[in-house]
Length: 232
Ligand SMILES: [Zn+2]
Image 1 (cartoon, rainbow, N blue to C red):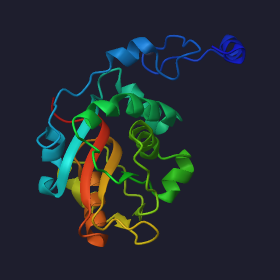
Image 2 (image 1 turned 135 degrees about the horizontal axis):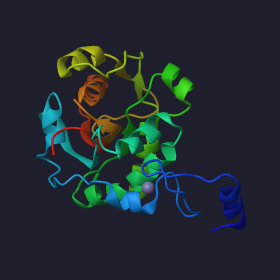
Image 3 (image 1 turned 90 degrees about the vertical axis):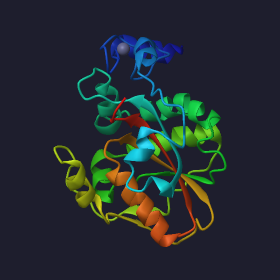
């Protein structure tokens, strides 16, 4: 623990986003006790699991996985709120770096040429200052050595907030909002690992896949999300 970190913590104590305990110099955003209590997703198959089944056309996806259960009524909900809205994207990066290797060992990301985060619209990114999915993707890239690709998938518009929308309304709300650009990176015949923060209905991820396929018909897609909001 550095002298300056200790001094900074004395002057301005930092607190765990879940339990509120004061953090020591080695901890960031989340205390080690809460980190150990986060509920890991228990499915093990990358080719037959609830996330894959929730995508519009699961046959379009080679493999998928997710690290932690997300439940809006649990205290651990705060982890995702902090990552997404409260300026703690590095927590997402750290959790992905720690947890993705479990899925990598099962084959997720194996042979992947690029990690691609689901993008935010430029307007929302400007307002928030970061894209949480990009930080999670950085954690995955860091853990595996697979390069990030940030110049292909683009969000054309901010859709309305997805909260309080049904699954079919979400699908309608997100259809056509992503576009994949032909530019420096050619994804024809490549395998990409698409990364997002939380998977709920799969509408956002499905539309990202549609956009990738429309521009690069031979791209192979795998999916990883840090949180899984569906069935246990
Ligand atoms: Zn805690």
